[in-house]
Length: 292
Ligand code: NAP
Image 1 (cartoon, rainbow, N blue to C red):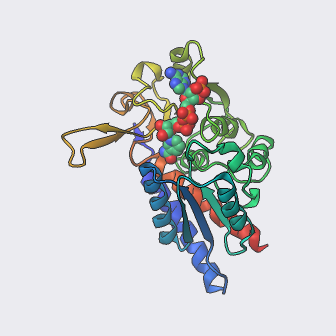
Image 2 (cartoon, rainbow, N blue to C red):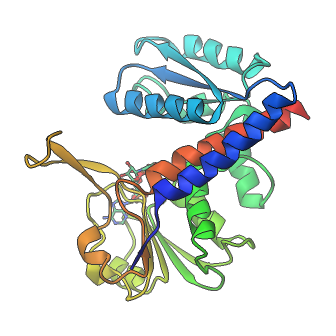
Image 3 (cartoon, rainbow, N blue to C red):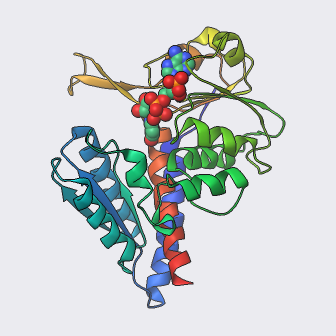
């Protein structure tokens, strides 16, 4: 078994971005600028946003956080989005999800200028993904494509099974793997909670991508000997033996599945890190597009 090292791969990507940004600044350009809109005080969202800011700094991307109270109205949020849509100093921005329950997330995402939608969630960018046109690809699947590419994993003609069909992970992942690219050109099966014979389908995968949101759901009997296993899930489980009182696990039972897999991503240290690196790549792309 070989580990797909998210830390190593994300450090490679960030070093490339850092060098490119430094060279542009040396040539007199301003730094790329990513903004994040955080509505409310969800602890996990605060952690994610803080980590994105820290990673921006580490590669020379300016970051600005717009914190909004959880009780704001749709109109107030729309005003912030419009401000960011029109500010030429902002190259890209994200609206951190989940939003408080009074908001229709899809409606809010549709307010973002697609050219600044570095999360790749806007319908225009999702449409471009489906058509194979150049746009922004959702960071988690984009980061997984980097993992497959940089690990030299063969995907052409392979059977790729994606478990989970969310708009931000499973569905874009299945589209990317079925496109005529490399990585890509796989035969893709997209599974979800209504899939029959999930175990058999999963066990027929050469490449198994788990984005289910259930801790250690994928067990060894669902995995073919020699399969490549990508674990998107991230969960905190109570663990009194840890100083923090918890440990992180994925959607895959790593201890057992790693005995069968040829390649596997760990949790932590896997997809979470390449997701952030891909967001930085998208920001640099938005910046370069805006400077044309
Ligand atoms: P989500 O929106 O909750 O979607 C979960 C998907 O799994 C749904 O399509 C659901 O099917 C399917 N599912 C649930 N139970 C199932 C079952 N018993 N059998 C087969 N399919 C089942 O989740 P998400 O946003 O895609 O996230 C998935 C996981 O990845 C979560 O743990 C999340 O925290 C994590 N995540 C990590 C990152 C990262 O950067 N590492 C980024 C995003 C998400 P239905 O459609 O039929 O309901």
